[in-house]
Image (cartoon, rainbow, N blue to C red):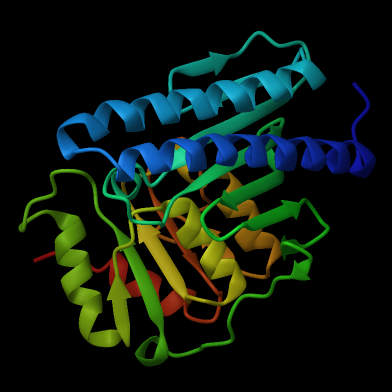
Length: 266
């Protein structure tokens, strides 16, 4: 297949259409979740997740039948003849969705030979769609995005992500406690995709996690990069989507936050 900016633009259009379709499914099921008891809601959330992924995959594969796929809900294809891979999270923020808390999103990233070329994150509750095309910037709807200019941790709004079942003596909690006195505030939100999207908009200044999957961060990593931010592992080494180790910032506070994160835990 031909490769280049024009192809990337077509991929972006398809990713946007797929994200909107998946988001429509989530909105429809969200009303069922909020209207039912918690004992039944878990099954509905699972159905919504699977239904969203199915709609997304079906739309994309009609346009790109020879592409590869990686999706949260058991979706994996590695024998496609074209060297593109779609990395899909049909519902990022499952716990929020389950509780009726409107902080969740659809996340779709596209790789070519392991390099991210397109990223789309769609928040169906706010009708906000965050997009990026390699080398062409990042956008919220039609507005060009730029990360914040905050250059001091003491003035920073940060977000941390913890693995399920984390205990009080686990390293992520110790990192959180170490950084807490240095930041203006730290939050835990439940959606890595939206955390990265919000970082790209300048709504927050830094985000770190040691528990993400490729589909949680693929789209957001490109969006942050194209908005002028910086994304690495917590050690400062280059990011690898297959390794659950991410530090994303506006760039200005990156080194200071990295240094705190990699300080040995006593």
